[in-house]
Image (cartoon, rainbow, N blue to C red; front, top):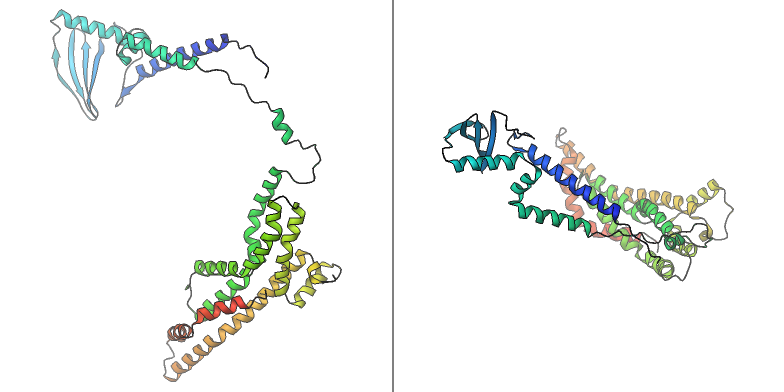
Length: 370
């Protein structure tokens, strides 16, 4: 590193100016400060008729003042809401008058007197000034690091075959916003959550189970169903990429292939052929050669169709219970009584006795072709 000659002259001058300004500001602030709305003047000349010679803080908002008015000395007590004269003091003793003059000199004189009152003596004033000066003078100028090596790392003019780490981080942060939509559109979550929603509507339980429970159960069933596919993606794409064995494009192709295979197994030929005609891509030799933007919407439409078919099968037994209860109430002449109110307990009883939750979850998981 190249040596530098440091000129401390301007540095010391700046420190001295800073010390003087600090003392001046502190002196001004203390002279202007007051407690409980009592503000002392900046300069109290001796020619004024009324002078506050001394103040003693008692407790809380209570203070005791020694006030000089002409030749009389008064002791005044103040609180938050009142002011009272406690008595007068006759300065008959010459030492008392000397103490008052000394206190007045220190309180209204130079900043050194203010510092003596603040620190408790002339010796403590000099110790405080030396400590502040030493604290400001021990600092040493610090030189910035050489930026050449840092700039060479981010040289955008150099041709590269792979994306740089900052660019990868930006792309990953952008993809995180699309992750929930990809989770819904390309997995078994869509069919699971729709079937569970149909079950709640068929039973007529309004908000039971709540939406949070349905979403949570759908997420865990999706994780269980998609675990084999994600395991293949982790083995063939993620781990080799993290170990720097394959490039980014190869890792992306390997990750899409098993996911596309899962979606093609659940997609009907009619929907797939429709989107192939809609996008106007040439017919591939095999379905796995289709682009992902053709397979994904066809998979979603097929999932919606399959979910509605399962929902129809779920509604049938509960619809029969509603019809039986409605006809029974009509035969009994209870036409003003809602059949839904009477049929709900019977629906819950039948669904529980038939072990409906276990059968439904098993049917949802087994409905996916793996």
